[in-house]
Length: 209
Image (tube, rainbow, N blue to C red; front, side, top):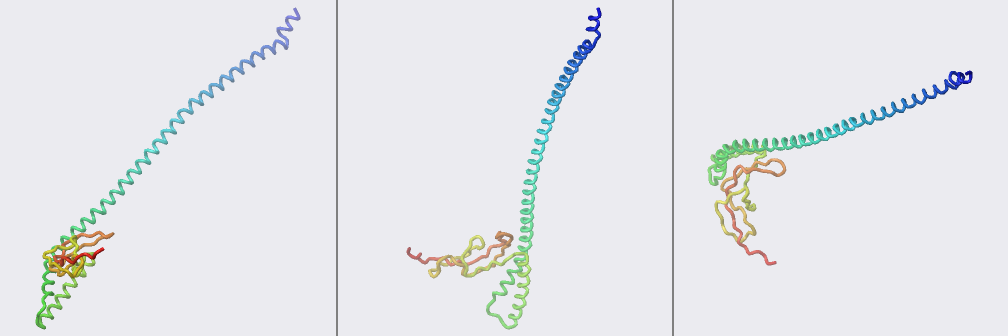
């Protein structure tokens, strides 16, 4: 009887109970760790999805910014072109109304045989005409007066022609009416009115090769 009580209530019994309790606690700890790992894996998936979404939105915003920047650049170019065209049309219209007066000045200045009194009058006309021309030049408007220059159909209008064997290319012999051209940026220009001219037509044989 004493031996049985010793086995049941002695230190050995306590060790056995403690052993069972330790194994239970170990099992609980392992389960908790597994749950934590599972929770971590579940939590990491949403984090990756959020990162992917943010990257996608960033790319979309970058693409949108690039498109809007290109559209704004095109808008600026169109605005500049439209302003140039509007300025060109305004100046051309204004100068067109002055051409009749300038033509009258030119006709007076082309008079050859005059008295001394008329010559003094012509000097005054020349000064007035020069003042007009200076104002036009300040706005990049140039006179086309191409005597002895090669004929340019883009800036000149041939009203008459004369065959010539002493020239190698078509050349302006006489200007009946001066032309006017508006020049603006990078070699661009707009002919307000072509010069009306007499052209010498080259008839000389081309040199043999």
